[in-house]
Length: 253
Image 1 (cartoon, rainbow, N blue to C red):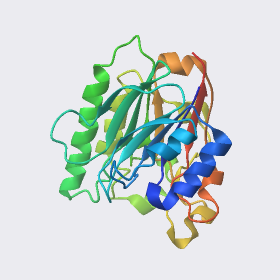
Image 2 (image 1 turned 45 degrees about the vertical axis):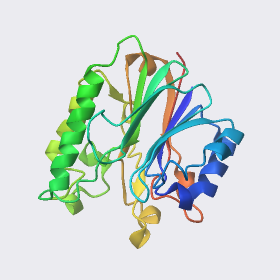
Image 3 (image 1 turned 135 degrees about the horizontal axis):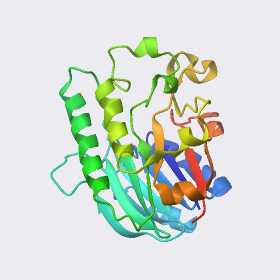
Image 4 (image 1 turned 135 degrees about the vertical axis):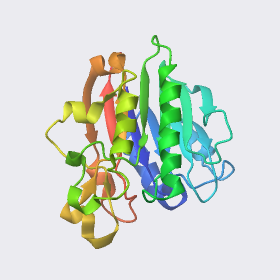
């Protein structure tokens, strides 16, 4: 099975890129973030023509997450089941694997209320994952808006005092891993940066000024059958790309 996570930074703006990528790479499951669409606008019919069932949790011009699957799409859940006002989490069971597409809040600044919202959101995700059934394989992917370590940041000095690298954020990621999950891309590539995001400004992609913030967490069952995990940098090239690249895990159960 091939599962991919990709923040597309507006599915409306990036639809041609996403469609073309699906036609070439045909993952079994694609986890999307930042669709920036309502459910009415989401291209369910076009995706069906490509062989994908899909579920979307939209919010218009902001946020939005989706799951696309060629291997079934059951038991769809949206959000945490409370009054969270933002469309940032969707889950489903695809081919016997429970998957979640996560778009973690940005945080904005350490003294901004949105930073506390980010930490609270990650704590809720941990609570959800603590309760997951051990018998079901899990893949939790998305744009986490956190670089897990300084190695995941092109220049740690440039981010001192900023979000994405603060110790509370990184501690929240470690708490997710403590539920029995592994950051699979880093596990397979301990000595490669594997950046997944590059700013549109200042030629950041060309200069290699990236962050690794798009992550795939897998449980022991998935990890045991994993044969590859990588970042598709080519999807960040060309005309009108997202500022994020797809991150892929390939495994068998």
